[in-house]
Amino acid sequence: MKLCWLDVRATDDARSAILEEAIHQRVDGIVAATPEDLETLPPTVKKVLFPQGRPLPEDFGGADVVIVDPVAHGEPAELALRHPDVEFGRFVEIIDAPTLEDACQAARNDRWAVLLFRDPTKIPLEIVIAAAAKSTGSIITIAQDVEEAEIIFGVLELGSDGVLMAPRRVGDATALKQAAVTETAELDLVELTVTATAHIGMGERACVDTCTYFREDEGILVGSHSKGMILCVSETHPLPYMPTRPFRVNAGAIHSYTLSANSRTNYLSELKAGSKVMAVDIKGQTRLVTVGRVKIETRPLISIDAVAPNGQTVNLILQDDWHVRVLGPGGVVLNSTELRPGDTVLGYLPTQDRHVGYPINEFCLEK
Image: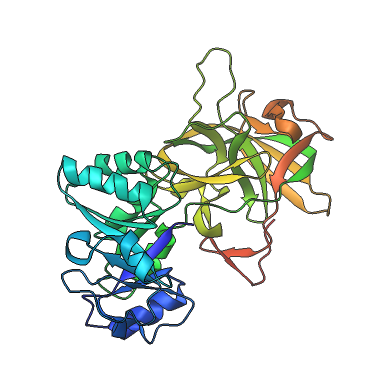
């Protein structure tokens, strides 16, 4: 989980509502200009004093962290010796090569490095992240909005350790917290036993082309019902007559569900460029990947029925072609047209019903 610091120094309108939202969303830190602004905050949030353009106060009050400009306030290491109960960090504004080197030094040596990059390119941040690869401190990068925060969290794959953002309205704290979620939960996959297959005629199927290379033991979960899905493998394995396309999953008929962010499901038909889907491997490890394109075409279809150890039934409708594949235990690749009753495939059994893709506790019968 990446760190979210909310800057309320310039927040006047709706400040109390923004703080209430931030605390409810468990934002990691609240950044204020004076110790008085931190007094009413609960102990669940890190209190960050950032007196930019102001002298250091005599008393830091309840501040947990103080971010200083060394030119105006002194060196963080020296201040830490005088105030051992407070953590100190360094603010660096990056505008040229010398200040970029200052940022690299701060990221390597200081407990907290709060960085403001004036140029829109993220190349300088990449350099800082690389320079601080073995450091124990944290890089907090200032973002102008949630969209920039999402980019910062992903720079150089590792991303900044955290983002400092000034909210413009109620809702920004929630959006920032959602953008900070870079890890997805593992899933408990189950072994499903195939009970029947049937050629069911023509229909539309969707190929999901992502912006990511899948691994050989990885694909996406797809099913006709929201409570039962089968792991469809990507086209990472060699096929006759055509090259591999390791970014693609020939996923199934357009009505099918797949998993996306925040435990939500999406129909394959509603995926589009920019959508997120959950990639899953045979161990249940997951990651979110971005959809680059969805190809929907009319093809012959095959229906696969399977049953879980608890007796729950699962259905998947795929393109009726040998090269469309699913995964079995141990990463065995199974051609859909060669599946027979008794074969074992990997799947997942979500426990909640769905309303517009969101999990909800209500009665819902799917068949």
